[in-house]
Image (cartoon, rainbow, N blue to C red; front, side):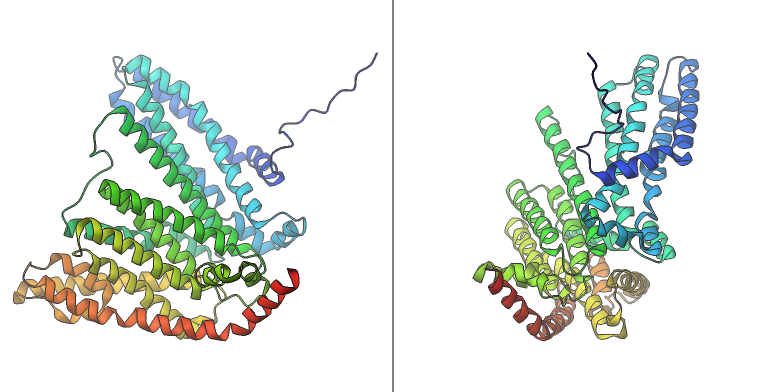
Length: 475
């Protein structure tokens, strides 16, 4: 009696073909094998140094952590820095889409390949932690937790670099990687709000009970999962065809995340939740306002199939920067209401000045000749970099003038970024009048942006009419 031999396979068929393809190619590269070999040679030397140093691991702990962090958070994530740019440049991306592989699966496959390689290296580092625990008496659980945190941070960084690989300009990718102005500016805004209201805090400022620590770990993991989704969805939407937009999915997840963080902040009064909500709002605004206007009727037809509810949702979730502006207004208003209910209205001007700055940038992009660009993301980031460069210079000069003259430089109230930076440094007597003037001038930009959005929305009316016809014919 003979039995048929099953073919040997290295990966199960349940895995996505893109994941298997990218993982096979990644494991066979010299970059992965060289990194793995060099990493273990260095860690063996560090472990031997620990064993020789009278059984103490404290002297070499920084060396071990530095090597592991360098590999997991920098070397491996940078392997995807040209992943999608090369596909776009050589025209192979269109060939992949002809195989009916969605843009999301393409992006997920490239990200999962590097993350699984990183997981393989992370697991190979566990014996060194045990050796350091035996030789140096370090606590095993915190060391393993820190190693898992490095892998998780590397996964988020990989997703971020992969989303930037959709930019054609290599120099721009490098600038954005090393100068994260957008998220730094919103993080700075969050710091100003917390400082102005005297509500600064840290992640571990609460009770150190095991339950609280578990909740903190779960919160960090959930926030990292959102960050991975945000970056990967941004990359997928930038390579997807106009007839298959992903705006509704991305914005729904971002809005839901912001809603959960806002309610947690309102119920717990922990400033950590507001600090986490700030980058969520920043990323959603960046993603929404850098989408080009979509003129494909099928992109709007799904909303009109849902009747009146769909027509309302189209104002916030349909593709394009026009609906993105209204969603950013709604989410900023929600976060402002949550903040006012918890700590009062003193911090609302800072939030409004930050939102007005974004409106000013996008309004100038749309009315200047750059509006004809097919890719608004590099234009937006470049304008933001230049704007905050001038804001830093003007704010420094304004602070010097204020110290010399004994009063604030009132002309800086016209410029929202500079007003956001200089307002917390003013005295308690000068700050209220300065903030009133800054908010008055800053109101001009959301109003102008609203008129521009309504005008463009009206121009898209023929496209929406065709979308209604498609919805009726499909029903």
